[in-house]
Image 1 (cartoon, rainbow, N blue to C red):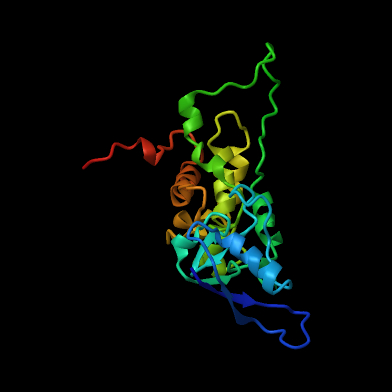
Image 2: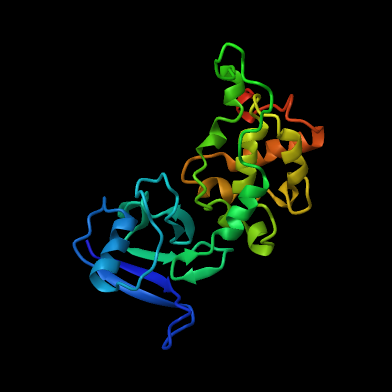
Length: 250
C-alpha cells in the first residue's frame, strides 16, 4: 500500500520558510497494521531528519505523541493505517503555542494541572496496625475511571472553550482533580473544589463533548466534569451519584 502524509510544518528559526506550511511525503510498502508513529519515524529517518515530534514509550502509556490526525486528536502510536486511510493529515494539537512542527509548549497545560493539587492529601496518622488506609470497592469505583489519565492533553486541546480562553483550567486538570476529590481517603476535596469554582474553572465547560471521544484511555471526561460541578453546587463530593450507578432503561 502507498500512503501520503500531509504534515503541517513550522520552524521559527528557518531563514527560508519561517511560516507554518504544509508538506507532503509519500511512503511505499505500508502495511495496514503499521502505526502512524512508525510511519512518522520512517519519514524522519529516511526522508527528512528535520521533522520534529515528541514520542517516548510508543505504547499509549506516556501520552507524549498526541497530535491531530485527520482532524481529530489521537496518539500516533495507537492509530493503525487501516484506521486512518491512505491519505493522512498530521498537525500539532490546538490551543498551545507551537515550538516546532508537531511539538507544542506544554507548560501552560501543566500549570493548570498543578493548580488542582493532583496529589494525595491526608494529614491523619497512618493506622496503628501499620496497614494502608483501606477503601471499599464501592468507594474506589467512584473515581476509578479518572485514574487512567496519562496527561497527553488530547482532551484539553480538543476543547473549543480552551481554544477561546487559555486560562480555562481544561478537562484534563478537572479529571485529575476528580480522581482525588472523590477519593474517600483524601482530605483536600474542599480546597480543590474552591479552585475549580473559579471563573476559569469547571464552569467554563460548555458540555460540547469533544473531550470524551478525544481521550485515548477511554475516560468519561464529560461525566467527570459534571460530577465535579455537582460537588461544587453541593459544597461536598458526598452523596454525588455516579452516572454509572443509575439504572438504564431500554
